[in-house]
Length: 200
Image (cartoon, rainbow, N blue to C red; front, side):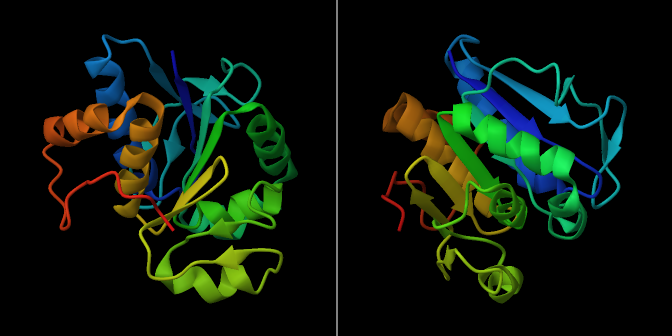
């Protein structure tokens, strides 16, 4: 069983977590509900995201189940607000130490850098924020790739690139044929298509 925990916060970029949420939940469905995905937030109650979507988290930072995969989205809330919130960054750091995989999308990499898991690692982020992330130091920003894997850390460029990296991750966890089945189920047809290519 794989438990995916997707962090949400005010002004998180919607598709940064909704795209991977779809991938993780379809993966679970195709595995006869062997897995589960949960939304986790600092506080209970609705969270308003970057484009105005409101979501209701399943758990807070204090009451979630053990997570096999920690997912951190980007958005203005990630790169301008939450990276200065020690409650969230401390939680990310602690949770990342126990998780098998850490998955960051877009400027969620800024949060992962502030919290520690991205320090000294090769990462991807949104193209418009690559210089700003690199300027923070102790990180190698890989440019012009959809996603990067460094050890147990998977980071992607912005928004839709999170779907690609989430597909790679379920392929690594449950096999390439399974990831292709997820891709078919969600009718995801990128160019090039999902081939389970090794990332940079």
